[in-house]
Length: 94
Image (cartoon, rainbow, N blue to C red; front, top):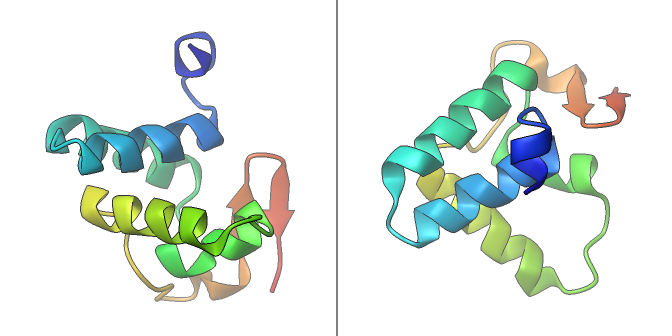
């Protein structure tokens, strides 16, 4: 529902990408990751903790990371993006 009302809602796109990948729907997962990368080119699996903040249960973050890996989100920051990570609410600088 959130993505229907706001297709650029990054938290919804992250969940859509991970859940579609884990449910063996690679086309939908890749589309969600492609949109995420348009909105936030520096987003990587390795930077999720910065964007998301602490998760109550580490296994929840691990599951989200694995789903996003399966969906095609790159693992590490490369090529000069490491000091600019954008969240849905603004830009973080390392």
